[in-house]
Length: 436
Image (cartoon, rainbow, N blue to C red):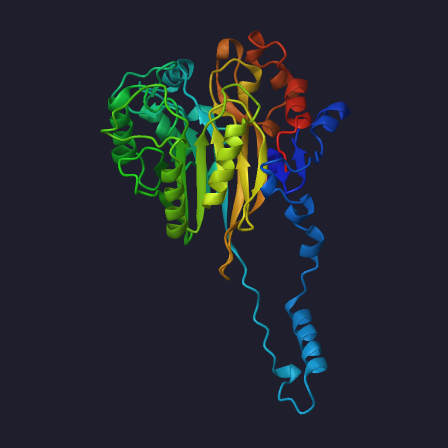
């Protein structure tokens, strides 16, 4: 993991948060180590925390090949009967297969309000739009990852006049900026996918399929439910599926449609197909209550269902604020990480907690011995959408890139006076955001 940005490190049992910011001893205590018990999913799937933890001591105790050779030779010599043809010196110890690794990051809602569109127009030198400023501070990190995923909350196109809330239409320059910032996987299913009906779906599909860079993958808008989006990277394959609770508008589906979370048979079929086609499966769910930090029982039940179907990682979006996260044990012995909501990535919203999100980081470990893919280095890194007075100069940063003075002078204080450095540090440090 890149340490410079600060992170919440998750190891199936404990969470370490380091902000990388010099703050008072009181605040340090708030942002320090948090250890929380494993969250409840369902009684039949609960297991002890000790079973869910990786033993760092055990990892440190792995013997060298020479030590292993000597141990095996010693064992054979002890157990071989008199006159045996086995000789210690003739034993060959095959090196243990080491996994290949793919680093992965995911961020929440890219929610382009009219304020952001206007600023992008002002940033452009010769007309048009330039959205790159919004992501400039964090782009180097996402560019360094093998794969980066983002929830694209709005339809991106140039066929419909740019607009913000409530019916969003975002210029294609936004897609260009996201690509240049390092994003590879674009999740398109949201409650705003149908803001302009079938015409809007066709307009955004036209951009993504014809005009966007070719080395990306989109997921969430289907013209054929049998299609499984799979991305190949460094000799490995990962499938990405996205589902939504629904959409604000209506579309007849002629130009494409979303798959809703109330279609369990189709979702199960797609995940199981994805397991056959790819080495790992990532499922994103647009779900939950807006502006609520509480995970609903419906979210938990759906997460358990999706994990049992075969997902390896579940990413939640839509609430615009962060919610809890946990490891979900499955009946086949796997542990599936689910972040119920990683909040906003960038927006012009005005609630204090709507400006605080997470970057989800993980490493996919692919094992040559046929063992199912596993996740390691799972962490949630705090992020802040910054802006000045009257929401000027909106841009997103990692918390560790923000000074206390910057947070204290944040323009959102005009709407949410409680926002300040101590509020942010306390928010990320004292709330049990992950239940492992």
